[in-house]
Every structure is written in C-alpha cells, then in structure tokens.
Image 1: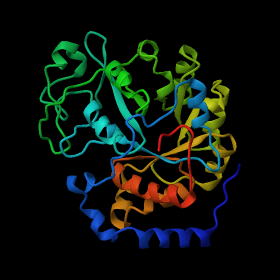
Image 2: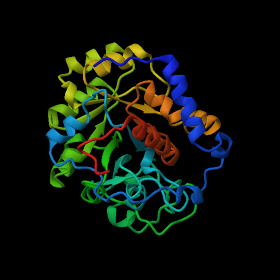
Image 3: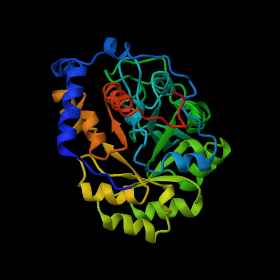
Amino acid sequence: MKRTINSSFLAVFILVLSSCFRNPSSDNQQDSTEINTIETNFSAQNFKISTLEDLYEFFTYREDRYPLVSAHRGGDTDGYPENAIETFEYWSKQFPLIIETDVRMSKDSVLVLMHDETLDRTSNGTGRIGKHTLAELKELKLKDDNGEITEYKIPTLEEALNWGKGKVVFTLDVKQDVPYTLLAQVIQKTSAQASVIVITYNANQARALNRINPDLMISASVKSQKDLVKLAEAGIPDNRLVAFVGTTQPKAELVDLLHAHGIKTILGTIGNLDKQAASRGYQVYAEYIENGADILSTDRPADAQKALDFYIKKRQLKSSFINR
C-alpha cells in the first residue's frame, strides 16, 4: 500500500501535462468566462454514497484512489458568494467535489453557514452573527468575492445538508461557539451522516466529537507521526479519519505512514500553493496529487479540476462511488 515516486516518471508526467494544457501564463487571468466553459454534462447526483459504510470505504486510501477537489468555503466566484447553496449547486453541476463550508450559530441557536464571526464582509448586514436571530439573518443578502450584493441568502446547515445528499460531500468547519451536540443533532435529523466529514483541529476535539457520535467521519490535522498517535490514543479508528496535512507539501514519510494506515490526505493549497499553480500553470495541481495528496482544498477549484481530469484520464481511474 506504500506509495513510491519515480522522479524521472514525474518529470515526464509533468512535461506531458504542460504540452496538453494551454500556456501557464494565461492562467494568471481566471475570469468567469473561463470558468463557464467547463464541461457541465455530469449528473447532479455525483456520488453513490448512501451508507456510512460507503463513506468509510470511499475515504479509505488505495493506490488507485480517485482524487478530488475540495472547494474552500464553497468555491466563491463572480456572482456566487462563499458558503451559499447556490454556489455549491454551481460547482456540483460541473464535477464531483467536496464542499468545505463553515458553521456558526445564531442568537436563537440555529446553525447557519458563515465563515466570519461578523456579517460585515460577506453580507449587507452588520455585527456579530450570534446577536441576530435566524429570522433577522434571513432578511440579509450575501456578497460575492468582489463585494457585490447578490440575491442569495444565508443558508442554515439543515438546508445545506438536505440539498447536498448525493450531490457533494461536505467537510464542516465548525466554529468554537457551536456545540458538538447540536451539530450532531442536525446531522442526525437530516440523515446526512453519509455525506459529512467534520473538521477538528486537535485530538481533544476529535475525541469530544467521537464520544458524541462515534460514527461520524473526522478530518483531523496531522502534521507528524505524533499527531497520528494522539488520535489513536483518543480512540479514533483509522477508517473514520481523513488527515489534513497542512498548507505546504508534507514530507513523503508522513504521507507514506498515513497511506499505510489507509488514511487519505487533504492538502490545503489555499495560499502559497494556489499562487504557485497560478504562476506556473494549473498542471502543478497534478504534482500535488503525484506527491501524495488525495484531496486538494483550494480557492481555485476550476483549475485544480482541470489538472485532476487529465490525471484521472491518464491513469484510467474510476470509482464505484462516483457517477462519472
């Protein structure tokens, strides 16, 4: 199950990618016109994951694993705000993907999707989310990444989970003011356990969530072997784990260790790695996969998927859990 990388093969692979894609210099200007040219003939039901056992199996690492893009904050782009169901729908119609989204709590204890503690940056509201009732939040409109006000509203977690079953897999970034008990109740109410992974940042958080609902899949930060040991000591089974390995490419030894345990990795390309891909050309995203990333958490989902499409086709990769 160990991964081995042949440097000469990698060089040839990247050369082939470079020749098949357009000039990297043109990648510096990604606009809505380019995004809208992505092929859109995929089924709205992208995933054939209906049970927890399906979810566990799909996220267990194998050498022929099917790599995925994770759209950071839902993949906001021109006209489509972050953490909005309409944005999730836009991307889900184009390719199978993971939606990373943020969960906060309203004044009346309803879980909603919003990254910031305050409303000012991403909506036409002001002040802290926790000072507003759901009814008040629903009166607001969301802004896109250019700061333009859209017609889209702040969704509840319940609305998003009901929409997303079969269409996407969610990774939920749960903010500190959200009780895990309430989160678990919403996931249970919507029967969404088979389409949800909950993000945690340390072994203590993972342990607390696992005690409330031991069936939930967890994304945990794993930067070293020590982190993996702590998660094992916290009682988290390997088949409940996806490892977030950071925003820089991890050492091969760590990737090999995780893969030997059957644990897939999420590489955060948000920040410098996305900038590197923008500068060198989007074929760079295939390098990240070749170096051991299984999921790319990115602010540039369109370009990342183009590289993954070539990688998947070149390797003739398929998954019984994906409609494609």
